[in-house]
Amino acid sequence: MNKVTVPLQAPCVLRSPRVREELTPADWFRAAMRHIAGDWGEVSTVQQRENQQNLAAGSGRLLSAYRTGTGEMFWVMSEGDWSDIAVFFPEEFEEYRRVRASLDRIEAAVQ
Image (cartoon, rainbow, N blue to C red; front, side):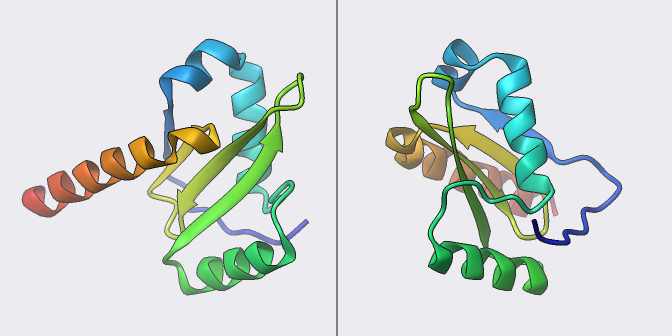
């Protein structure tokens, strides 16, 4: 496990509709806590290194991969600054990107 420093303000956790349907709150919450603790789950060594670099820089994306009780993979992704955490299945990635882009536009307009 990696040493991770998270700001005192809790990040917003975004969950896909499918995650809300198929995972219990305990399941997605446990995965989010593992992600915050620096336990990246089943990602490649290359992704683990990238996570560490992005975490040290405080920018970029952090990706973790875990499995449901039935063995299906799902992802937990956050920004290196811990502004939010998203929990979704791999096939929902494009939808996540659209939502993330919309949030970025809203944040830019408010600032």
